[in-house]
Image (cartoon, rainbow, N blue to C red):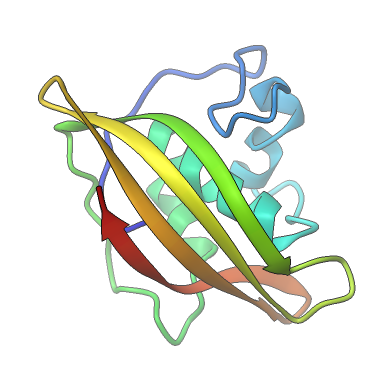
Length: 139
């Protein structure tokens, strides 16, 4: 997911935007606040989607592989990320060093619905999962 999104107010008791059914404070919130690390590539991908929803550019940059991380990131205020569907995962578990997560991220752009389909690659760098890159297919 590139530099797109607009911030949505989320509290620790709000439903987490990533779609796990857990509250934000027990799901992506601690990752955004750098209190903990993602255990799996999918958990990191979910936290990155939530970061687009809440406008957390710091988490997005911090969780990006140093080799592919941009110098900066500006989120598009016209986009409102609304829902995440995880379609498939390959590797990316507790004992892996690489992983791939395929997902569909739904959004609204000036009131019109859309979706971003991506296969994201993740790498464990110094014991932490980071986003490497992704192949996108806007729908």
